[in-house]
Image (tube, rainbow, N blue to C red):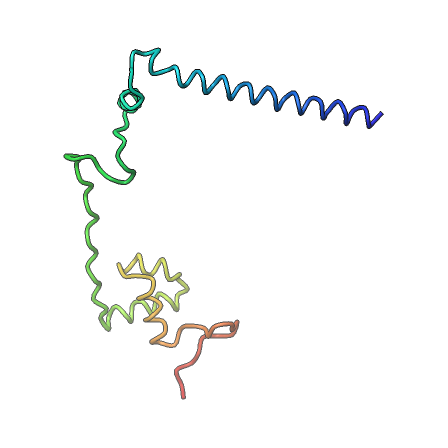
Amino acid sequence: MVTDKIKELQELQAKAAQLQEAIEVERTRELAALPAKYGYTDLNAFIKALKSAAGTTGKKRGRKAKGAPKAAKPAKRSRAKITDELKAQVKEAVEAGETGAAIAERFGISVPSVQNIKKEFGLVKPRGSDSAPASTES
């Protein structure tokens, strides 16, 4: 019957809770005895020994130890010179159907620079439009 199973489940849950509490009490007792078990009279000395054994110094995360080698800084990128000739080449590439990322990589310029050149030549579709690029005629 279902009610019998519910009652049995409740009894097992209560027993599991008691077992968990007993484990916690025993674990706490054993942890408290560890420093003396390994010959330490002071808890702080025991913790220091644990950290040393684990290879941690107790310093805050993100800080480097004194004397640690510094990571090499990435080389600064120089700004590309956008000439009229480069703009013409980018325009040809756009008209040939190349993607902005491919054009940027090919000519050593950023994707936003490619986009700016496309805007300058009127090769960018207006937002929300599926039609052809805006024309430069007025």
